[in-house]
Amino acid sequence: MKGPDRITRFKGSKRNARRDTVWLFGLHAVRHALSNPAREKLRLVLTKNALDRLSDVVTESGIEPEIVDARKFPAPLDPASVHQGAALEAKPLDWGALENLLPDHCSLVVLCLDRVTDPHNVGAILRSAEVFGASAVVAPLRHSAPETGALAKSASGALERLPYIRVRNLASALEHLRLREFFLIGLDGEADVTLDDALAKAPRRIALVLGAEGQGLRVKTRTACDRLARIGAVGGFDSLNVSNASAVALYAAAQRRTASLDNEN
Image (tube, rainbow, N blue to C red):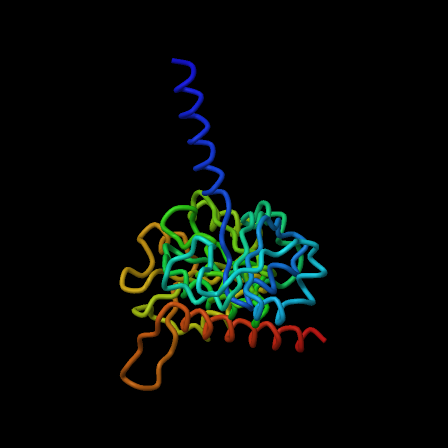
C-alpha cells in the first residue's frame, strides 16, 4: 500500500505545484514581468521574433529562454490566447499583508472590488489604478479574478507594479481600512448623492468600493461602507461597466486629492 500511496501523493504534489504557478503571455506582460525583480521566473518560451523584441530584458533577467517554432508553441495556454510568441511561467506575486502597504498619516486612495470575476475587467482596473495613483486594489480571495495570464495581459504591466491584494474576507478588510482612517465610498447607481459630493466631504484617505456588473455591491458590503454614491450622468443612460466606473471614480478621487494638496500649500 505504501508504494501506490507515495505515487498518489507525488502526483498530487505535482498538480499543486502547477496550480502554484501562472503562465503570463504577450509581449507587454512578459516584458514587465521579466523586468520585475520581485517576480520569481521559472520558464521562458519565446519565438525568434519575440526574442528579438525582448532581447534587452531577457539578458537582464538572467533566465535562459527556450526558442521555439511559432507553429508549435509548447506553453500550456488556452488556444484563444494571443501570446505574440512570448510566454513566461512564474510564481504569483506576493505583496504581503494589506496593512504593510498603507503608510499612516498621508493621503491615500485604495480601490476595493466586490466579486469582480472577469480578468479583463480587473486588468483594465489595475491600469487605471496605477495611472491615477491608487495605492492598492483589494478583492476577496474567492469569487474574484485570480492572477492569470489574461489578467496580466489586460493590465499591460500594471500587475507588476501595483499591489493586487486578495483577502479572505472583504468586509473585514473594509473594517481594517476604516480603522486606518479610510472613508469608505460604495459606488451605487441608486445612491442619493453623487460621487463628487461624497468626495468633497470625505477625509484625505479614501477607499472606493465597486461591485460586479449586474449584481453590484452585496448587502454586507453596502452596509460596511460609510457612504453610497453614484457617478453623475448627463444623459439618460447612466450605466458604466465596472472597469469604466473604476476609471471615472479614480480620476475624481485623484482630482479631489490634488485640490486638497494645493489648498494645504
